[in-house]
Amino acid sequence: MNGASTLKMFGEYVPVRAEVADVPHFSAHADADQILDWLHGAEPPHTTYLVHDEESSADALRNRIDDELGWTAVVPRSGEGVLVR
Image 1 (tube, rainbow, N blue to C red):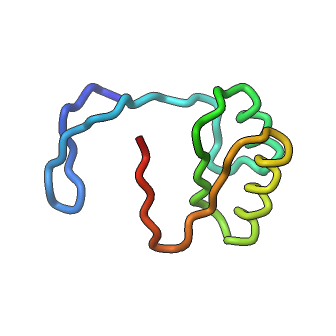
Image 2: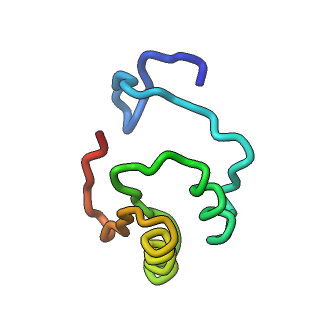
């Protein structure tokens, strides 16, 4: 947020090659209805990755995102890597 060009991860300095943005009014404790309300105002992404919560809960939210928004949503398996561009 402060414009740093590098950050330290796992003991190594890596370049910041992303735009960092603050998303106000979004709680890490939002329920599924609140998350869907927030997503309704967003531009549809190529893919939505759900990486928080128990697998069954994340899968239920994935289904709602697909059904209600028509977006591609994925719950990666534990330890699975994904390339985000």
